[in-house]
Image 1 (cartoon, rainbow, N blue to C red):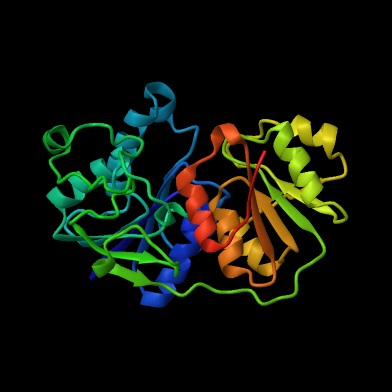
Image 2: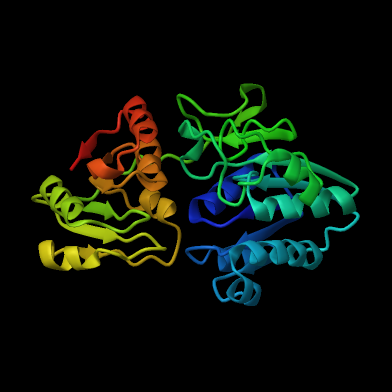
Length: 314
């Protein structure tokens, strides 16, 4: 019997995993989550075994993220009882220290392992060559330290890696992965009529005054809700000063599921997977990116342009 191991951390990744479980009719599902967001560890635990490490993880606090990830790989492997079993892995990235450490344990101590990729939001829609966080070691040193084949760096996720069996993704015009391994998974679309509200989504670095002013202009005449990035509330004072009538969106679940269930007339944000998701899967809602000139990303701009999402540079 094969254990299906999902390695993930974000709401979108968890949402996609639930669709893939249904699509492939997977059983014996387990999750390993390093610093999960949006309470996904609690939702997953209602159905499947879950092991996770949050920001209060002792190893991370004492030794930093890199050591914390290595120790968590061992804890996840032992707690989920993977030794000696057939394991099928689904992860959104393979060029990352935690996944390297987990692969080392799986390859050495399991009866057989199959590696697959799931989307990390909109990452595979972008041309992102190079090494991902935690994957800065040269290939020969990775082989020496972890004893596994390094991930391919044509895309920083490792999506071109020869050891991957399948790359599961939602439909898009261009996906930066080996087309021979690509499998399209149907995602639910919302055809509901939108509300009159506009949703403004903050970025990983927070929001700037220029962003707030531009979003306020684009949303003029509509009630506005805003959602700060789960990891950064920097700049919320600009909202208080320039858009005091905006109401913060408090969610107990996953943002992408909320967008499907409660469509907005328009969703505005920095370059993000949530805005891209809204454009692709919420039919009656408009999507728009607003970015500062100093942080403009030509690769993401090209992706947005190809998808037909307008970009305003401030």
